[in-house]
Image 1: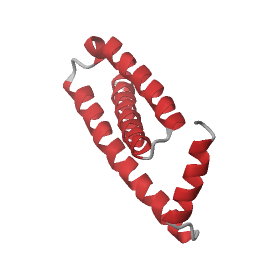
Image 2: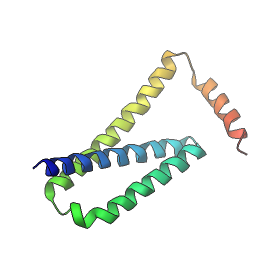
Image 3: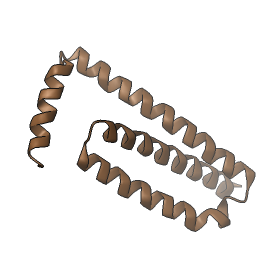
Length: 112
């Protein structure tokens, strides 16, 4: 019973983390953040390979599939809320979008 609960929680967390990272990677793509894209791509690939390796062993059970799906859903929601929080925090700290764009261009010039 405890091991079954652990598996459900584990796959829930795998789905949550995978979806969160995919959403963060999409934000990095929108902002042309090369280092962030690289890190999230590698992490997502490793998670995806782990899922492929264990899909036949663990995901044959309906409760584990459902826990994974709920984790994916909540991971996407958390990523959207996290992005909105960062925007709100930047506004609260007095960082406007012109300043961010200017600093972003300076940062990008370092890698060209």
